[in-house]
Image 1 (cartoon, rainbow, N blue to C red):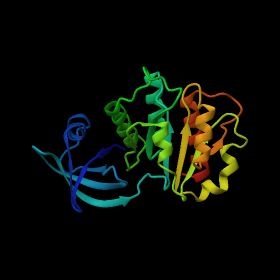
Image 2 (image 1 turned 135 degrees about the horizontal axis):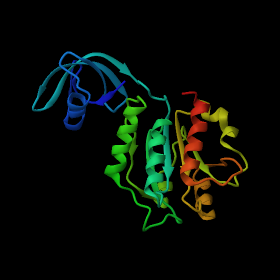
Image 3 (image 1 turned 30 degrees about the vertical axis):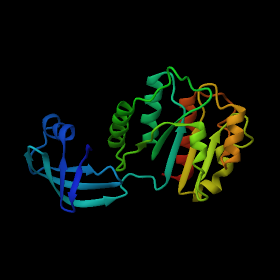
Image 4 (image 1 turned 120 degrees about the horizontal axis):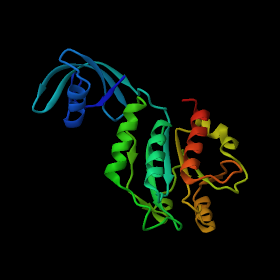
Length: 239
């Protein structure tokens, strides 16, 4: 099944713009009268019929709506330090979408490489959109502007949110907080940079309510740690 990102004009009409319109008509050879599946990027999917092509794009008639289509029912924010190797970062972002991440929060830590560890916003947003459609989700995850570690901690975690920070020496793994996570509607998972968080960063995070968890006894690459943590959350939440 192919999914297209559309602009919803009203409850009965939608529009495919530019690249989405081209892919639908020129690449996949859909024609007037065909029924396709579209998403609004905000958590809703629709069945829609192609009505006509125009200068604006491909005009659609909405046939049926599917609220929450393909979404996990929990907001997961992955906090991560940008990696030096762009292919590894892009791979983590792509797989993070597939594993249910709702928002990605890059953060500059003490051990983040300030010269090579950068965020290419447009490139990563393209990867996020492609992964969203590929895994049949209806909400496009958000790539937030990069924060410093101080800025991240200044935004205190609301009482109803659960915040986990990975640390190899933490006494308990994620499964040790299974009961709390099963009932959580918003989960934050922080993964350190290459070289991990400093002791001071961990101390500051714990003081702000973040809970230390380990991801097993092996030392993992940052991108592997992120995906391992997300996989455990996916298993606990059952989506």
